[in-house]
Length: 315
Image (cartoon, rainbow, N blue to C red; front, side, top):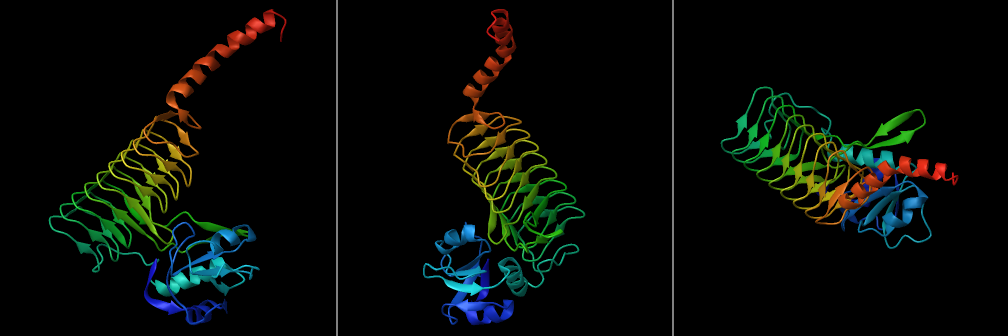
């Protein structure tokens, strides 16, 4: 998320109740998660395990709960609870973040020949390209961008909050997700698809993608162009799926997985690690389809092998 106007560390520190370790006149231009930061951004960390990763990132400022020996040249905002501090900063920058819309927001920018069916909700700062069709009961949260010539079928929810919580004693603390969803031209989303917005950055679906019914895409996931997904696929957050990947029905993809261009994953598979481009995969966990089929054939022979070994007195 970029700030509408750069903020000095002195201003931010006063706002969130932090102490500046560095140049209090330095002006930050935005905030983001560790995997998406760039120069000028603020990120946060609240565990020594992740100090070094945050301090060696592209971020210029780190909200942190201690001053380490080596700051790697970063400006620090020291706070006892960095998670809450960042939430407070987000709420300051976007005070109406959780305000729901009733109907179509007056700040939405809607292109030519867009079809809006009954009971469609369109939030603040939404952009919808020409000739896009929104079927009944579609709900589009704030800050979503949808391209031209798209089809969004009934019951889709685009831009809902990321599934992002911090465990506290006795409850879960919600992160105020402030990212966006960006959908390219010529995309079709089947009925009841759910696309979560980025935590502080963008969830991206490239042009020409075609999704079947009941697809879920988690926060900050990047999906390339002309990707096909059959029904009931569930993609976790921060995944990277390259162009022309095909995912067949009921596939689960765990977080932070990279699937290479043109890979195919067959139905009911579970993807828990990166997959190379241009290959076919199968199983839970997945492996190359030929090897997995051979593995299953051998497993079916196992009872007979055991029986033969028992007759020989080996077992």
